[in-house]
Amino acid sequence: MADFDITSDKMDGMGPHGTKVGLLRVLGPAHVWALGVGIVLVGEYMGWNFAVGKGGAYAALIACWFAGILYTCVAMIDSEVTSTVAAAGGQYTQAKHIVGPLMAFNVGLYLTFAYTMLEAANAITAGYLISVVATMTGYDGVLDQRPFIILAILFLAWLNYRGVLATLTFNLVITAIAFAAIIIIFLSTSGVLGNGIVHHAELMAGQAALPYGWIGVLAALHFGLWYYLGIEGTTQAAEEVRSPARALPFGTLAGIMTLLIAATLTWYTCTGVLPWEYLGDGVNGSVAPLFDTARLSGSEALIWLLGIGTLFATLASANGCINDASRAWFAMGRDKYLPGWFGAVHPKYRTPYRSIIFLVPMALIFALGAPLDQVITFSILSGLLEYTFMPLNIIMFRKKWPMGTIKRGYEHPFHPIPAIALLALCSVTFFAVFLGYGTQLVAMIGFYILVSLWFHFWRYRFVNRGAQFTMPWPKPEGY
Image 1: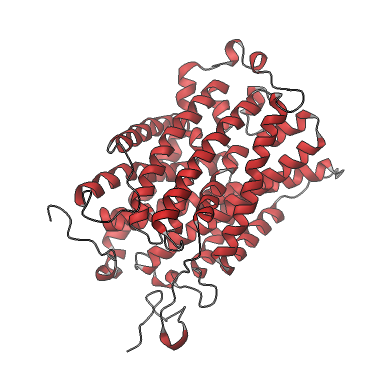
Image 2 (image 1 turned 90 degrees about the vertical axis):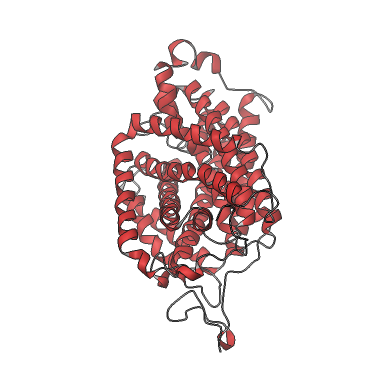
């Protein structure tokens, strides 16, 4: 009897002689690094500066390091669980095996919305950058950014459709260039190379240091997440790496170290050149702070380098977001948490092509119709809900399958301290979000409650319950 393809009711993605087609295992540690850092590095080029507007330059630095601790915990926890649960879907698949179906469904939605909103924010920034470059080259009209936003999303969706190896190799190259640009502008403006132009003492003197006091620091915390939001997306490559036990921990942990360096250098460079009032004003002030810093440097070479770096960072992030959102959506479709139609694998390119195509209109709607800070906030909120799940996930994982009962690709140290720290940091950040965006927070939580009810009372009847637990693990402790 033929081995039927589980990805679709109509047997989409069938290989020769009825063999099952799955995702290709072609990625290495460098691709995992490129996926994680590529998604996040745009946070150094735009978005983080809203933290300056909330509380000033020092508040943004505190938010940067606060979020850095949070995401270091995320990276350590993810590296252990994902190297053990090496399947597409990342945290969704972890929740399915460790916590239960309802949590898995919600986590899958958190992932999809966080990445899709981030993709939209990237497209908005790319459109802005192209309009600025047009002005610099002599164009004196008002450039319509919408065609560039649409073309960017469609091109990257096509690239993802064609294959994961080409997609993440492209990400590796442009992410490396964007990271190098941050290093170069830091060296150029700080005085290491040539004359320095940073003036922290003057720009951050007196009330400018903390213009709103410590309440401003608290309000800035949730934008600190933007420096690192998306590093957990490395888990979505679990089913496509050649060696999950090696590639996933190495790529993820190297990625968070890269981002900690990039975030600190970005803060130092921009706050030493741009006044905090301009830096933190996302409406009439700076949209792309590193690019604006380069423009004030007076160096045409730096302007073009940071223009290219900003564009590459936005493209790398949007590219990785399409990859990750489609894998989460695909995994949910494959398990029938969503219609099985979404679980199809392309017979030639071996990609979740239907999930890739389906999510394009959602990204376009938000990119064309929502303000940048609102799009960023919705992405952060979905990510924050996901991070709140992760401490519970690792605690239950260690309790159900203690050390030595199953083989782990990586064992994160100091358990349960990272889990407790992550839960505490998430709680503080939720309060910070509520101060600035309470309506959006309540609306999003209400949305997830409604879809949870829909899943429980309607969709779960279609789930293939016998096929959803695929890990060859022993029975959990206490069961």
